[in-house]
Image 1: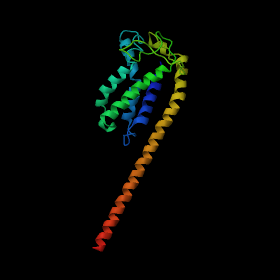
Image 2: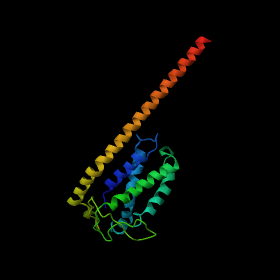
Image 3: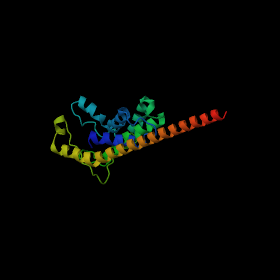
Amino acid sequence: MASPLAHALVGAAVYAVMAPRGAPLRRVLPWALAALAGAAADLDFVPGILVGDPSRYHHWATHSLAAALVFASVVGPLAPARLGTLGQRTAILGVAYASHLGLDLLTIDHTLPQGIPLFWPISTAVFLAPVTPFWDLYHGRGWAAFVNWHNAIAVLIEAVVVGVPVVALCVFRLRREGRTTVGARRGFAKDSIGDLGGRGRREAGG
């Protein structure tokens, strides 16, 4: 499994790419929702925590395309309307959730069975990419299993390989949206001045 940090960053990248023009890119909420969607599949740790074994239900039903569809269908209508139309909100959240599956497919998996059940509940077959460039995180029956040098190095690699490009992408989208907004305001100002000038000349001629 990749870390929640990597999943949240990729979820934010999805919003940077898919956010419609005019979306509130300078507000925290849409980025937070996309990041949450990116990490949401790992909520399968919660029932495991309740039974004293955090990893017991990990990499199962929530790590499927069906779960991405259900998540987007439920959370999309609840998301603020200013984030886009219902279809846009649902699509962004669905793709952000599905990005979690894509990242896990590219991550080393030492647990059995190795991989994730992409097509659950139709099939329980698990899938893993033939090339897995990302390290997995060690995890076990207790939280102490998460705290080790292997996991620290894995998160550091993710911060560089995933974090740097994602931050650059988000900054690019913010700057581009800022230039578009400034250009639109300047165009509006010019049109307004032109209208006022034309009205003044007509009144003077009259």
